[in-house]
Image (cartoon, rainbow, N blue to C red):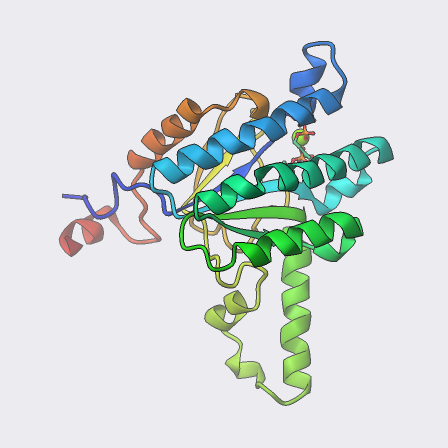
Length: 246
Ligand code: IPE
Ligand code: IPE
Ligand code: MG
């Protein structure tokens, strides 16, 4: 019996929502059109994750490296983010969803920052699904920020070098009380992490689909959960060890 390591709904799903630009270009439309369509998909996926009993959903919306895109595209993305927050806030609250953001939020335009902070604040007591947007997020930047934070605590004498262990390190990450994803989904056919949650994905199950993000539907999320349920997470142990544990 392997019931403890299989057939479970992942508690925490992370998604790299990729392929908006190509989706639009294949239709002879500007990339921006794909971003608009992609934004529209988010609601359906949040609803479905909620319905399926997922506890945490972490969505990669804009990376540290995405700042290097053409200025026009970056400003459209920022505007879309702002509009998304305005449009979705009511539904998030109605559904008891807790909204959070991780990343270098201070790099976002001030209007967006305010909206992000405000949405986090008004939803902070909500006990339902936790939706986290990774905005201006880079895994390496997060790790460097964490290393600096710990180094300054050592310098100030608050902690000693030997106090630094995996638990303390995790507790200083941007994801401190969000934790590690069980399942990572990436759309668009690319099979890479692109600087997303480098620490947190250590033991996540990876699921890649050729669907572009604007085409990723609730049924596609269910397919990824089916695939997850057929995986056996071993965390470095042997199959036999997992069997005798039951
Ligand atoms: C994902 O789609 C959205 C962001 C990175 C902001 P892309 O814009 O990367 O679309 P492709 O990968 O170029 O098709
Ligand atoms: C990753 O997609 C970032 C987001 C989806 C927000 P990218 O399109 O930026 O990644 P690469 O460039 O293909 O690795
Ligand atoms: Mg891309």
